[in-house]
Length: 396
Picture 1 (cartoon, rainbow, N blue to C red):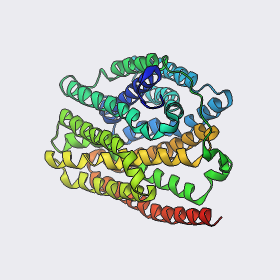
Picture 2: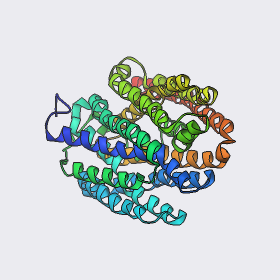
Picture 3: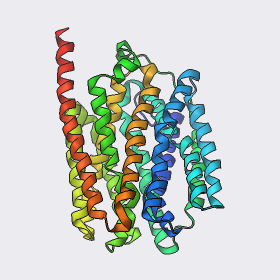
Picture 4: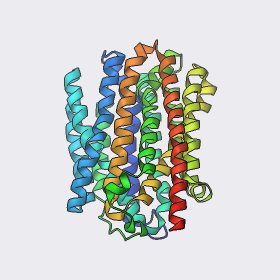
């Protein structure tokens, strides 16, 4: 996998794992709230349940990273996590009380959320010097997300969402099978191995500001992940078209992943992140303003390519560059647990509190936009710290 990132067994296995991992996400993020609504739960209960999906990211990635770093078997943890997530998810086929669903959500997301950071490390280690091709492999995840969003949206609009647990179980089984083809890569030493210790790097001003801004950006996605499809139904847009909107956003994300290497080579990472925060704030404001305008919402959701795709590509590269190779597992886990775990859980919970079954939509979308704007202010500070660090490195 030196020149062609998708050649050979490892490239195909990584592509398949990303496809099925994000296909599961494409099923759960847009439609799990719809499924819970059809089960009779109100918006506060839906917000509480959805927050569990993100809350396990605060613990699981770090525990998995510690074990994977200690035993050096990241692929085994990906395989085991996929299997255990599938087995626990199967419980949702037979019981749909609030308490049982809460425990089942905690169980399977604990293992599922631990997979991605290790998969990221395996991918980057497999690519070696060609880590800039990360976006090409990651785009298969976006393709899986699109496929499930479109197919599930059309299916659920006609038949209801009662079949969601069966579809989810099938996807978890396919993820487990795909993971069996992965091989453990041998990471090469990189110049960043000469950097300071893990904790010293983690608590630099730049890293703290980056993680704080990332947490706010992910928290701003709370209304989108939890209520967007329900919101579209409230303003007269069906689930099928809502799925198309979500899929269009992820299609734009694939395009940005392809452009990311060129953008990162041409522009400073801090400047790109500032653009991401500004576009994200604009996106949430326009999501409310466009209401039931189908063309308007299609255009707004296309901003997902910048607000998430470019932001994620920049974040992965920043973490990858900042930490030594032997700390990559812990570093990616910390990023996932703080940004996606803490930020995602807080955003989902706050959205559930403020949504009020749709009557609080304006306040909720406005709060999301404000969170992104605050992140932009923090990123301005982050940019200053980056300049200072660069100046100190040059003078030394």
